[in-house]
Image (tube, rainbow, N blue to C red; front, side):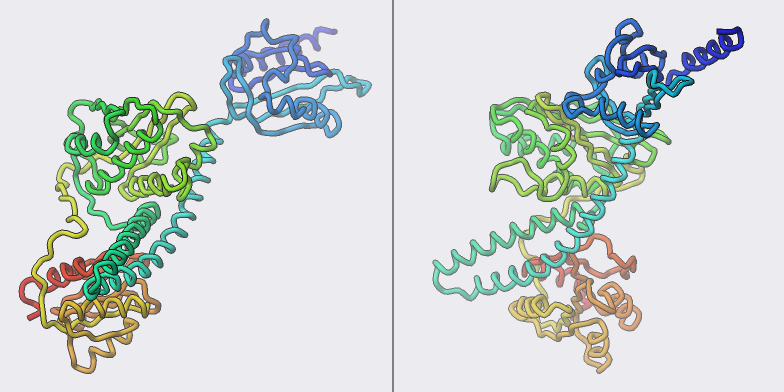
Length: 510
């Protein structure tokens, strides 16, 4: 070798040894390592003396070795002139990383194969970012589907619950009343499921406000202990001077209780659940899907069996559950996921088989001037005094729901008018006969309930209006005038009566 060739080889060696972000090394024709650069040592964990002379299949997973992937890679590189692929690779310490691998054949002047050049990059962060985007897109698509289904089911449940309640009032035989009570309980469970679907799709009704995490958890402690039983202990570990978070306190309590029950179920033999909270900062440019800013991270950690990577990836998908038949709906974690997203936060699940699971609720810190919002009333709280002898215009494009609403109103002693669309309602009002109250559905073709509210406010500014919808945010982006009462679907007769009382407060209906 002449001086020129020596200098070229020296420059090449200096270049290869200066690169630490890539593993660059040589293989002989059979695949045994013949050289090793500092980047390879940093990436794979082996020093040169440990790895030179060993087969490069050392870096592959057992599954890939059993499938003959190392031999396939060399054959493809030799026959096609290049091999490139992504896949899992194994470091010296046994940890895995996602690698981009390139293998090029090296031939002498006569064209004979003398070895291979191999370059490996760790692209785990890139893959994680791509997976996060894919997961977000998948959850968004599933959310749109489940939100639409939940809305349709809400309409059906509104009709079912209303009819059952009227039938219960009119039933004479006690055994018939018991059967109706069972049907009502079943319908109410269905309503709970649809609310969880709406939560997952970020379309549930929320009352966002400032919430003190410490006070909330302390106030729930006795409830959580009664719920999970004596075999499981609950401990708390909260950082001092935690700022308040911005969320719906009532829904947040439900989410926390759901996580605690999940943790209990993961430890059938008993154990300890640790609830902790600390202030975290998401920096600009981080891999987190959250916007930069300050967050309170509330974590629920169990000592259960944990989840493998495949189960963990599916855990927040609607209807996926590892619990036995009849023991889980697969909607608990999706509900938590939806609440976090709707509150501007994130649900993060971490789990290792044999080491338990940690569920983290990341929620944004509340603005200092934000007021605390009281929890909404219980579903069937005592009735407010219901107005009587009113004329109510009911508007709904679903004939079943319209008939049910009219039935509930008439049972309350109201006179009713009916319309199956916004246009039909406006036409009826133009005849000069004004009702005392209008109750309208939102999701109607051509003219939505929100647009009808706008028209009513413009033409009849003192006419009380109730907007019945299962959505927290109106899909078409149209706002509703102040003073319009929101009524969540499915609603009971008691909730309808309270909505009428709220709409008529101040004597506007009399």
